[in-house]
Length: 169
Image (tube, rainbow, N blue to C red; front, side, top):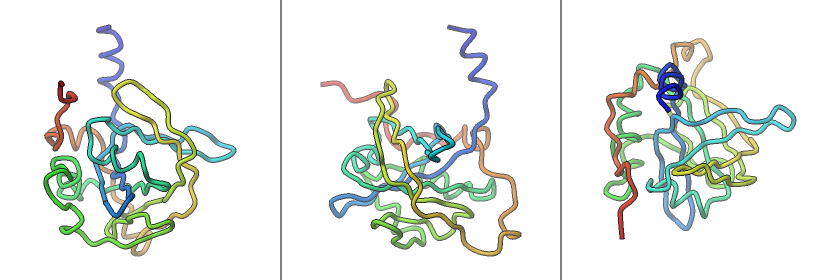
């Protein structure tokens, strides 16, 4: 499969932070697998690792919030990508507010949307959450948020806050 590794290695997708709330618990993680997956109706899919704390909260959630980050927001990416909610409250370190359906929206995200989960798709070690967008926005003037988005190449050095492989046993 070396050929597919070469293909995948050339990709440089936008990164986003996905947040979930359910049962009084909040979670969020940095995600590199996300894309629009339908035009009519508009649908977006985010893929969450089964070993991630956010996945466990998202399984019981009705809505997820998806946030784009700018390249200069690496510290925010490191918080949500390099730390696990199993061990710390990431939301105690950022400004956020409650959006549609109780979804957690990060105040400093230049663009975000909240989506109702319409289905889940098994994709191997990740599960795709297909979202129907129900609310969207961003903070500040549009001109203030036209910098380059955080991409995979910008985040490659962030060590995952959760184990890469599921625990055995």
